[in-house]
Image 1 (tube, one colour):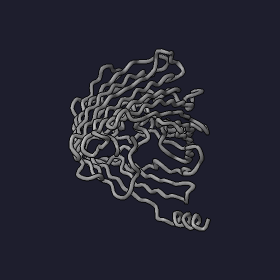
Image 2 (tube, helix red, strand yellow):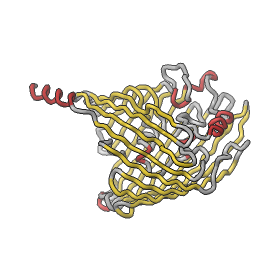
Image 3 (cartoon, one colour):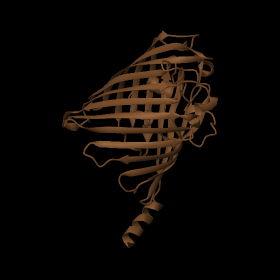
Image 4 (tube, rainbow, N blue to C red):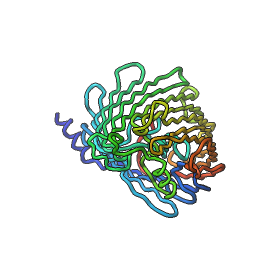
Length: 371
């Protein structure tokens, strides 16, 4: 018991882990639904503090700064406590945190393989969805990796307004994964997000007019979704190959996600919904070099009173990344957007040819990246 108490006290007195990640870039021109703006800037530059409180729980605080040539924005993206010793593989988390929905949402953007999130994330989740609430996850005692998660949020970050609801959104998600051989592994997931902030006419979707407001601002570090609905369904699938499981020298990652958002407003019928998808391939062909290709599409119903106008946007990105060390990434990306269907110039910011140069550097300890 004395050893336990001494060990606990030492952990409580230990200094917090502090990390800083700088994400600097230059982008040749704006893009539709693009989180980065034309010119020089900082995107999702984060300062994080993580502290373990004995053997019972840990806490994390992540402050984010984004800046471009015209404005600077600060936000608190994470501020939560998380249990460490609940039985049966359970973890309880409370505060502000990233939702477990989807494959990419739970990871920080600096861990991505491309300079911006896929279209479906930028349109339906504001890039990545975090909010204030409670979350309970459970890792099942099975041979396959199997995680189940349930979360309840106030929903203010998704709608970018105060919904006045204690539970504005809630989500359920599950992921399964395992090894196919010594060199291959996989993971599949399914998520559901219920958005209650749209009920009783509290907030019609971020409709066409709101969308234009964001576009006209042109530089808005908007964290809310551009297109929402009462129900969101997401499915994801990832497959990885590395010789004998050693991904240091070579690794091929194939990933795909699909999202459907239904009931965009009170007038919508079963045929009027948003959907988006992407598929990507990233190949590390040398310890410090990787290349990737991603293609995605977004189909949306732009609400205009009691009727809708269809819109469709495709985006293709090709990137080449150099990692001189574990904490640095220099990435060059070419992006092409193609407007398939438009109404009233909603996608007028779409760009044919965009070059983005990105440099990421991290200082201090930071969490290991997920699968």
